Length: 117
Image (tube, rainbow, N blue to C red; front, top):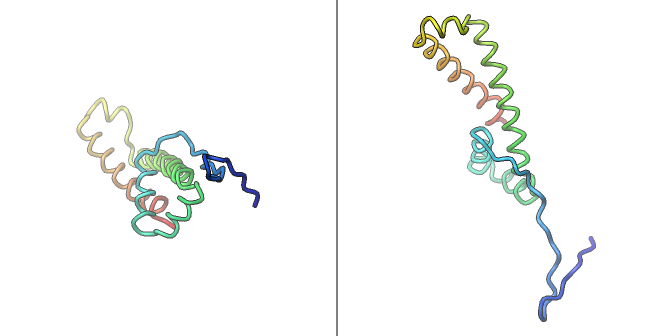
């Protein structure tokens, strides 16, 4: 490995630069993945952190989880017959059913994507 050095006063300092991290912010699923790795899989967390790929990995999991959430929500809405007509006719029933769907979808996404190694 070729390492270059810069002279700072009487000392040679290695020219080491950190990897560029993606600028995108972590949202719910990305932060949950980071926390999961940090608390339950310290080796993987430390390896990715030192390699500079932790945020990229969390962003990838975040995208997968958000896509799966969107797909499953649409599928369950179609299966259960939830539409805009129900929303205009009985808002509270629509909210109750949508909350049920969101909770079920969230449980599946967390199990299948975020908390899976």
